[in-house]
Length: 117
Image (tube, rainbow, N blue to C red; front, side, top):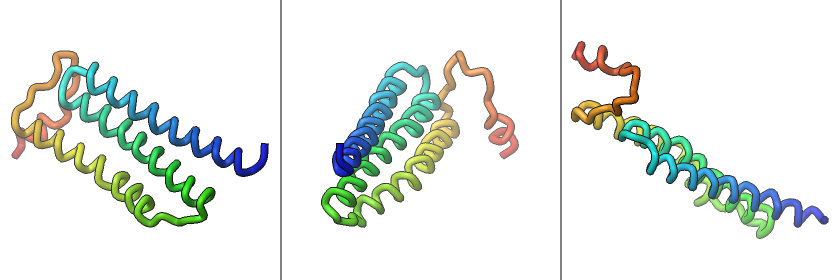
């Protein structure tokens, strides 16, 4: 096995890892009980899934094609930066709108903060 095949295998494994994270994200979205738990599952695993797929694609173009893709690099940066922030804002607005938590939830850390406002 030469060096090019090892690089291709590593890139394929990175992209496969991203696909698995995306699949786990969809399972979490279907199975979890409320908007807060679903948002947590979607935020963590889909962000990692997209990042791994974009990283694998970035590495493919870098090592196999000899091309540094600034668009993929910026895509990785902005997904990593904006996805967790957007999820936080969505969950905060759902909480402020009065969306109920699941019955299984045992702790509400925002109640004290929101009652003080």
